[in-house]
Length: 412
Image (cartoon, rainbow, N blue to C red; front, side, top):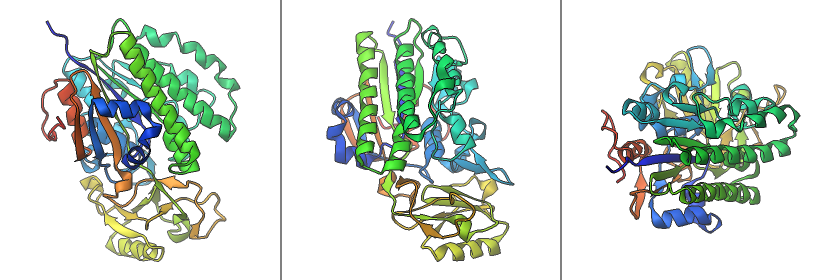
């Protein structure tokens, strides 16, 4: 009897379609996979094109107004708070795999619900993200211990528990955190590879490479540092594919590699605190969500933001129950929204801390993402453009899961 095809999904945070199309010579492993697989040259992003909506669209195949995660932060009726898997109201590919009798694993993939995975490791950066900033992916002293505090039993992962013993000695300087983040990404991808090559390989593995986004925010799109970090991610993909070949698992697994959003150069930061003093708001890169009480207040906010070139993009990407309470605005080109570093900073415009960002105007090409499917049973093809929601339905198709109501047409 022929065994069922398995699937590994790898997210490379912030790898844009533009970057790959311009610099694919710097990414030899991904370039080789594109030559042997099915590439979507431009996979669109949800609105706004930020991390949590992007990840959630990947695993649900639904737009943000349906899956519930309309930003890195969501509005709970009183304040904006970090989105969590509890906010996802659409079935994920993990839950669908389990319902179909498959074994599913999430290794450091944000927005995966532990209850939907037979094996689960939290993202190493998640605590700093929730406690600090939407762009902060930093290693706190207990993160390595948490990273390997697995849900479910997996011998290939458990021998790494000792790595957490040295977590309290980790340096906290910003430069060290960048290096430690890349090291954590290496550990995460290595753990996913070990699972795939173990005696009991899961049918579905979700994992991610996270520091590529943080480094682009800090140093810039297509900067030397960005080239280095994305080249490192490319090598991690090469390592994963090598491990599958060496273990004879390359004929078992299809591999899907994509991103959650793109990236684009930012010259100017808009300080919403100076413009909307006393109001509830949350920046999402070049998108700003604002909580309003009524149409008059919405009109007032739009007028204030228009003075710095920002335009309303409505609220159709927000769940219906919040429309009229949360409205969104897009910054002008090469601008983003950034909260001031201190309350004393009242300048409406200033030099950005994050010199590359995303969450641009809906449909902006710079937010389009890289995407390729390769491996077991995947043919060679080029697809010029596809909607974000088609990615999850293609994952379901690769795993031979039943079609669900609302599924988009698979890519192949």
